[in-house]
Amino acid sequence: MQSGAGSLTTFQNTLLSHLPVDSIERLQLVKIELPLKREIEFPGDEIRYLFFLEAGAASMTTTFHDGKQVEVALCGSEAVLGASFLMGTRRSLNRVYMQIAGYGYRTKSAVAADEFKLHGEFHRLILRHNQTQFIQSAQTAGCNARHPIQQRLARWLLLCDDRVQGGPIRLAQESIADMLGSRRTSVSIEAGKLQKSGLISYKRGKILITDRRGLEAAACECYAAVRNDAQRYADDNWDLERPIPRTATRGAKGEPALNRRNCE
Image (cartoon, rainbow, N blue to C red; front, side):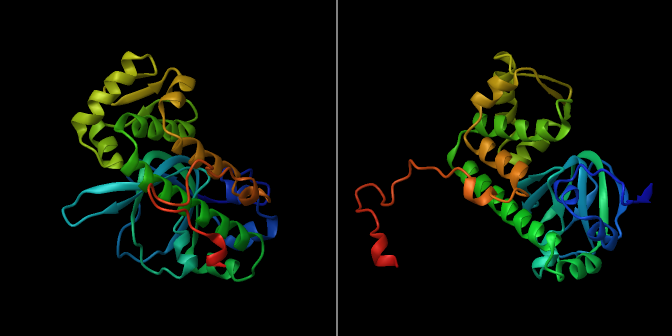
């Protein structure tokens, strides 16, 4: 079922909620249901629409020749799916589909491009959004390479929980393993440990977080980094106030640190 968005509509989507009424009207938004596994983008397919999620969660994945996939971003009500079109991408580079059912609004890509060219608030927020998505993808790549599976699983469950707002997460272990780039048996073992610790309840493909604070403690630093960016990218001083890790050294172990003056 589809319906339009009026000027008095209250939006849950971060970007839409910050747009002036005239921008909303020009985007010609259509409300749309987004059921589980609904395909939003597929590699090589033309990007015909932009989707603004109001509820639910979508996975953006990188797919490989053997059919395997790994998640590079988990998108909720902060997200605009298909926004790469506005950066010049006409055909999708990633697979994007609904991991948790929800709903949202869509607009034609050409309509969004016309609004983007006005260099108003929509233009500013899209650039902020795309930067946030890049940060999440970079953080996820580092996380998958650096952190153990239990921390990554805790991070991913927390990100899902943010998007279902405390409700049950209905996902099979095999799907979770695909998203984390891991094996199903590893996910099963680590989920069992989290359940034994009283952090989650897991039964028949339904996960409920029972101790959120404890699960946050079990997760790696990447959860807080991704969550904070998703929540605040529309704020004026988001980039200036974003916490930057200060523990990293500028030179590798055994090597002198870079002399910044030589780089200027």
